[in-house]
Image 1 (cartoon, rainbow, N blue to C red):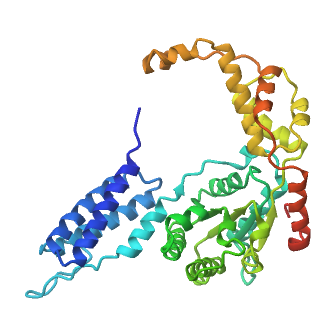
Image 2 (cartoon, rainbow, N blue to C red):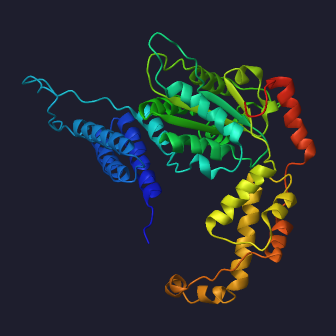
Image 3 (cartoon, one colour):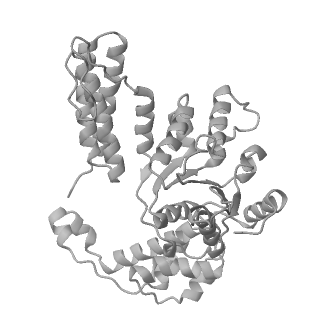
Length: 405
């Protein structure tokens, strides 16, 4: 069983890098050089865990820059490079200036990249919503006739009740485009990096343009809006201004890179009009209708090889008002209950160790009404009719567009 050590290696790299920066500021060049050497070695090891060849190449490039910086601080000649002419005799070799700020922020951004293998057929229902997203990037990426300009949309806002598939829609967009997928929770961005968030946002879009096509998914987008009565600090205003400038595309007007920003919120009424105006498409992601619930249940039951004594129509009727995530949870609990029922000796095998457990063959049977009753006793829909009505009223009053269009 392989163990993923990439997080620990990154922590070691970052620690060595920070110690090098601090030593250099104190003028302790030799000490700084030792830390930079160490940071470069850790970064090279960390490059092996990159999710794409482009990211690996970028990390190795930064490791080389750190190594050259360490050589310079230690009074050594830089490593020879074919593309660089040798300096004249008697003149010290020019050392690269460290890009601590930019490089560190961009390295933080690389931690937000996720490999998405989600495809459109893995999302049950939401056909109108999927078509709206597809048309957005189709207009941007398709070849245009000579002399003809076609407007496209690169900023999308998905709003609706929790668990309706907003994250899955963004992942499927990246997966079908084979695009670099940045999965970012705005609340984490603001709390973890407060004071540095503006630089991190700029680095996020800078890296996305380098690794395009890219999809930036900003979840919990309402976190950008301070709670009423709390006031708004200068830092918060700068964060919002930086993000709005990126959404406007002010930093990338002259390049041909494709970066799509998909933002998601369960609380769209918290967003002010200045923020809403940056989204060319604002798409309501509703609770699944009967056809969508049937498709979702099929994905989580039949496509996973499970049979059921309970008819699909009965399950569809029973799950009115359930979100997609809740339907998935119903299936998971019913299946787990069946596994426990059919394999009563499973827990005793667990106590015998990994070897015995790995050799144990699970038995399965069709899911029974009892299995589903267990699931329904634990999973209840979170969004009631009043919650759904609030989305629909807000959509009519503010967005004034049909659902999923």
